[in-house]
Image (cartoon, rainbow, N blue to C red):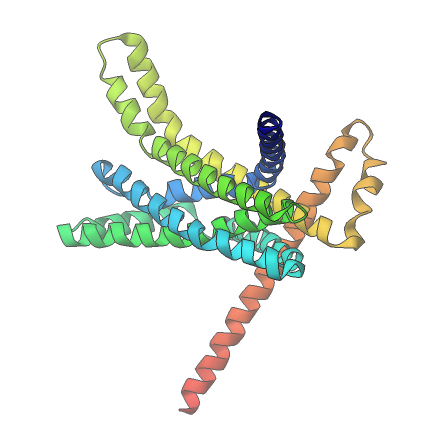
Length: 310
C-alpha cells in the first residue's frame, strides 16, 4: 500500500514537471524578443567602463536584476490569484510598450547621426574617467541605468510568461514564473559577461605564439562590435514581432488579417502571421511614439505657461 502511494506520488510529480517544462518552453518562446533586447541593451549599458571593472559591474547589475524579479514574480502571482482579469490588459500594455521602445530606437537612429552619438559617448567617457571618484560615479550611473532598464524588460518577460500560464494551476504558475525568472537572469547576464569580455579574450589570444590562436583572437576582436550591432537589430525586430503578436491576439478585429494575407502570399503563406505581427507592431510603435512625443510637448508648453504666470 505504501509502495503504491509512493509510485502515485512520483507519477504526479513527473506529470507536474512535464507540464511545467512544456509551459516553460512556451513562455521562453514568447519572451524571445524581450530576451534579445534585454541582452543587447544590458551589454551596451555596461560597456564603456574600464576593462578590469566590466565583470564586477555585470555582477552588480545581475544582483539588481535578481532583486527586480524577486519583486515582480510575487506581484504577478498576486495578480493571477486575485485579479486574473488584469492579465490581458497588462499584456496589451506590455506589447504596446515593446512596440514603442522598438520604434523609438528607429527614430533615434534616423534623427541622430553616428558622429553625434560617438562624440557624446567620447565626451562622457572623458569626463567619467577624469578621476577615481568620477570613475566610481560613472560606474554607479551605469549600474543604476542598467537595473532600471532590466526592471522594465523583466516586467515584460514576467507579464508575457503570466499570460502563457494564466490557465494553469497556481503551483504550476509558481514553478514556471520562478524558473523563467532564474533562467533568464542567469542566461542573460552570463551572456552579457561573455560579450563584454569577448574583445579582451580575443586580444589575449591574438598575442599567442600559435598562429591559429592568433587568427582566432583577431577574429574575436573584429567580431565584437558587429555582434553588438547585430544583437541590437535582431532585438529590435523581435520586439515588433512579439509586441505586435500580443496586440494581434488581444484585438479580435485583427484575427482575420493573417489568413487573408496568407491567401495572397503563395509559397510564403507560412510567414503571413509573422508579417502581420511585424506590421501591427510597427504601426503600434509609430502611434505610441507620436502620442508620447505630442504629450511631452504639450506638457512642456503647459509647464512653461504656468511658470510664466508665476
